[in-house]
Image (cartoon, rainbow, N blue to C red; front, top):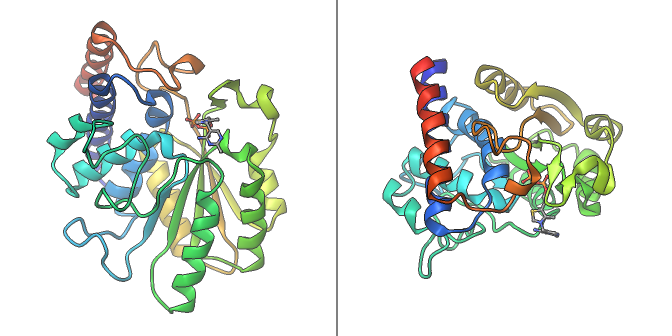
Length: 277
Ligand SMILES: Cc1ncc(C[n+]2csc(CCOP(=O)(O)OP(=O)(O)O)c2C)c(N)n1
């Protein structure tokens, strides 16, 4: 595994995220930057089975961005993976664009499910995983949730269902950045120990540094290869706004576009990282 390739791809996708949100004048940088290394590991670390030239290919793995407001992270990933031209990223949130504020599978190639109303993605993932199993099809279903999203009751109904149905082909990843829209997850409505709760629901659980690309590739690949008769939860410890000093761990950057000066500073910081890679 070429980690320096993954690192420079993740850096490029961080630039993409910030540039497209600045151009749109709105969007969600914090939660896009916290999860971009997870997406990088999935799509460029040889974990997810997909074909950008044939997005509906039979037997492919499915990826669901349950925290749909992080659409810029998904769009950057899909563009860099070849699902659509990179230039199109600058149409984010514009009238007529395929890249709306939340992902739409009827518009955007590579998007599997419409998301944005938090709490629903894991339920859809359960349905897809059941369907694949019923059809005796290959393919795993990966669902990326926010830790704030885990305050939604529907997440826990889906967690119970997945364990009951023994969905070993379902892998949920929690982007554990500790923040949601209103501040600290622990202060808004504390879900407490999310990994321990999934374990209690009957899931196979692992934890990982969500910005360590090598560790992410390993743990995601292991969960996929393991299969088994219980669903998998990977709790990724992340930092909201990761990679941009003034955005890191600041709730105010949940849904705010950088202005021209802020964008320039952020891009300069990312460029400086490239040199040290
Ligand atoms: C059902 C629902 N309620 C409220 C919102 C508004 N909302 C958008 S993002 C967000 C916070 C989500 O926090 P988290 O899942 O931790 O996302 P992250 O911090 O990783 O961006 C909220 C409450 C929503 N999209 N859906």
